[in-house]
Each structure stands twice: as structure tokens, then as C-alpha cells.
Amino acid sequence: MGGLGGRRLARRHGPARARDRRAGPAPRRGGRRPLGRAEDRRRRPRPPRLLTRVKLGGPVTPLLALLCALVFAGTFSIGAFPAVLPELGRSAALADWQLGAVAGAFGFARMLADVPAGLFLTHHLRRAYVLSPLLLTAGVLALALGGGLGVLLLGRVLMGMGHALAMVAGLSTILRFHAGPALASALNAYELSAMLGILGGTVALAALPARLPWNVAYLLACAPQLLAFAVLPFLLRALPPEAAPAARPLFARGAGAGLAPVTARAVLAVAAGGVLAVGYAALEHFVIPVRASREFGLARAGVARLLMTAQLADILALLPMGVLADRLGPARVVGPVLLAMAAASLLISFAPLPLVVAGAVLFGLAMAGWMLPLGVLRAETSPERIAWRTALYRVCVDGGLFLGPFLAGLLGAAHAGWLALGWSLTLVLLASLLLRRGRAR
Image (cartoon, rainbow, N blue to C red; front, side):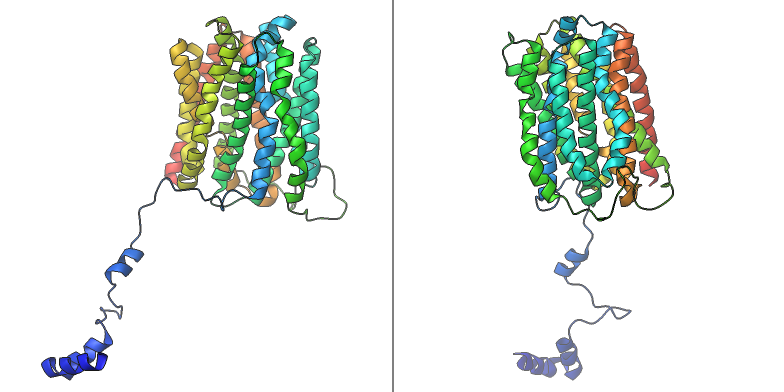
């Protein structure tokens, strides 16, 4: 066929035209052949899509799944605690400042334990995973004894130490072994598992009969945390082998000498995490349960339903928020998250009940971006220093978890709104700085 076509072209247009036909299209100037339609479509740049399908083979690994199962089991106690706070205060005859101290002792213990935990798990990651559920279980049992202020504080301190070990170990494992383009999705999957556990604790407490004493109901709601002991052997086998078999110190920063460079974006990320923690802890562990009980007259189940509204909004927004942050970059998404948190704080602290419900939804949407400052921090930190930097970040976050309910209790329920106004203005300032730096890049 090729020879016959060439002879016909030679008869009609001469030998030169036939040779050109067999040789293909004439090249453009500069020696480049013009592209066909299909090839042109393949080479043409496509506009970026904001949302893409998350492939299970990418961000979800066996190690990540086991970490998610562990944090799911360990957060039932966090979800069950705020709904029993008013009854706990009445049974122990606690003043507002004492109630705030009990609520804030959890974050205070985490703040004190974060740096030792980060130094410890640099070379002893497996030991940290073993210790955390033991401390958490001891804290729940001490709290459920229902004694005086000292026993309640001891229980919350033990719970805080257990959660500090678990969170610093889990986040350091993800940041070190799961770094890459899907890091934000992995962090939000971890946070989703924690939120499902928190929601599970709240739902379990709301479903239990109201006639049960608060400490019995709390123990039953925290029972699923025993799942951690079943998951632990599989997690220890899934962890990558530790590099140094020689004698290792109990506490160490990591390989390399000298301090890691501190950038403005890293400072803003740490500040954003801390202020978000202040707002979250004050709202969930003091303002929402106290306002719902005293001003709106809600019982234990009503307080739990109000908390569940925020938790459901958080859960529904977590994975889309992570995918969006992977596409746009965490620094560009953190700013709107901080603005949403500021608006939610004002609604929950000052508005009537219908608007408080709307504020709870906005609160949950804002908390879906709880892990995004860590994505910003990871971009500014080398892998061998990530455990140390994560521990310092958690000091700021857990300091916020302590200061939020403690300061709200110190001011009292009547004046806690002034604290909400202060952290809301700080959130707006941080959001503007992060958005400006995001546009500059």
C-alpha cells in the first residue's frame, strides 16, 4: 500500500512531493515536528484540581492503621469527661477555680511531660507505646474513685502523662516515617481516629442511664480503651527497626549537633497550635458544659449532644480538610481555620442556645484543621530533629490545653467571655500573618 500510494503521488505531483509524503509532516522552524491533536492534549498543562480521590494504597499503611486504632481507643476518656464535669463539681463541692483546675490538670501534665517524652522516644519509641496505655488506665481509675480535689487532680495528671506519651510518639512516627505529599492526609486520618474515639466516649456516656453515678458512667464509657492492649503487640511489630543497637541514652534530641534553624513560619505554626489549643480546651472543657448546664438547664445527655454536634462536624470535615491542605499547602489552609475558630468562640461564649449550636458546628469545622500547623512545622524541620520539634510544639499546645479551662475557671463562668474575646483577637492576628506569608510564597 505504501509503494502504490507513493507511485500515485509521483504521477500527480512529481517525485519530490511523494518523498515528502512518505517522510511525514514537514518539521517547523528549529527542527521540531508539529504535534498532533492527541499529543498536544497530553502535553497541554491541566489546571490543578483542589480535591482528588485519596487512594488507600497511598496514605493508609499498616503502621498508620495501627496508630489510628491505638489513638481511637485512647481518646474515649477525653470524650466522656466534659459531660460529667458539672456532676463531678457538684459531688465534690468544687468552686469554679477548682473545677477549672481539675479540667486543666490534664493539659498541664501533658505540657510538663512533652519534652521528656520527646527526648525519651528518640531512642525508646517502643517503650513509650507500652507505657502510655498503662498510665492512661491508672488515671481513669483514680479519677473514677470520686475522692477529694487531690485524688481528682492525680487522676487527671496520670491521664495527661499517658496521652502525652501516646500523642508525641504517634505524631513523631507519622512525621518521620510517613513524610511526603500525603502527609496532611495522614495527620488528619490520625486526628479523625482520635475524634472518633472522643465521639465514642461522648455517645457512650449519653446512652447510659442518667440514674448511674457519674463515676460509674465514666468508667463504662472509658471501657473501650482496653482495646489498646490488644493493638499494642501488632503495632510494636509494625514499627521500623531502630537504627542503633548499641547502648542508647534514655533522653536524647537526635543525631547531629547544634540547634535547628528557627524560621518565621515555624514560629507562626507553633503559635497557631497553642492558641487553637487554648480555645478548644476552654470551650470543650469549661464553657460549653458549664453554660449548657447552668444557663440553658441541660442535663448530662443534653450537654453530651451539644458536644457531639461539634465532634460530628469535626469528623465530617477532617479528611476533606487534609486533602485540601495537601493540594494547597497547610500554610494556606491554617489561616481560614483560625478565623473559623475565632467566630465559633464568640458564638459559643455569648450567643443564645440556637446560635450556640451553630457555633458548635463552626467549632467542629475549625477543629478539623487542628493538625495543619504540624504540616507547616514539618516543612521547616529535618527528619532527625522531628521528634524534638514535635515535643516542643506539643509543649505549646498542651500549655494551651491547660491554660484554657484553668483561666476560664479562674475568671468564673460569668467573666469567661472576656477570655474568649482575647483569644479570638489573637486568632485573627495569626490568621492574617499566615495568609500574608502564604501569598508571599
